[in-house]
Image (cartoon, helix red, strand yellow):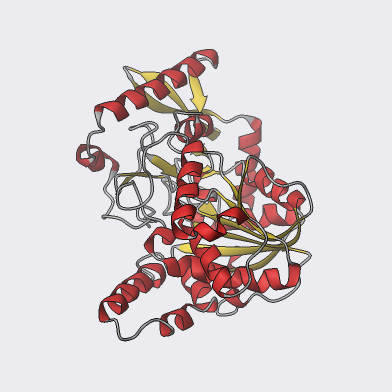
Length: 408
């Protein structure tokens, strides 16, 4: 089973082959990476010489002014490291908007997007909601990266300048009482995870230390919290994980969904990401975990290189998401593939309504639809989960195919 091609781009390589083929960073980027590594080494020295993998991943992605998402390198699109669905086609955001309209018509309120990337989805959702005469008073974006916030502001100003006054950037979650729709596209996969291994004498945790001028990984006996989490995980699987099995677990899911549950008073949260139900995530053949790195449209599985210059992700355990959501007072109202979500949201009608006389445009539209929906592209790998609170109405986007039964 392969987890090396979640996002679109050239075919991924094995780690050893990829490192030989990855383009060398420019001198300025290499110097930037070295500054981040210096900060890591300083923290390692304060922590006994090594950092838990989750802390290493957090610094690599989010260290203020230095981490991958906190610094200024271009990440999305052809000039970046990977392409997300909103960058592939405005059809994605238009379908999202149609599900938003259905909920906003009953709840009123606003839209809140977590980590809006390039701003493409925000612009497309706003434009479609305007066409549908369903604009909310506010479209809020919670974005911790100053660099990405600036790019989002620019994208909104370019695409829908007359709607710019409705868009607000937030530093933190709104106060409890939020009504409307929450959107999180490829947010969960970028949360720092703990790496673990099943050792001969119990659960082991991955740490990162410096050796001979580079970051290296080592496994140590896990702290009780991680050992207990893995034990709980194993009890929910058909059979125990074999000795030597390596994977990840996301300790941030509970707190993140707890905060979301506290914030949301009425409405829908849509989580779109690549991942699996638990039994597929921790399948015996997936014994190396799901970590995936992206650098200039090349995918590989070594997070300890190009520190601060590459994306690091892990697939999502959607069973864990569902469990944490229920603990947070949310309901799991739907779970399906991206393809079936888009079809349920009216993708076919959007295509049918396009200009059939423009052959070039029709060919491009067909290419976009294939990329978003085919099983070998994004259609099956990406899943969509609907979480609701005080909202008992059916959701049209999940009517085509309901996969909630697979989450057990």
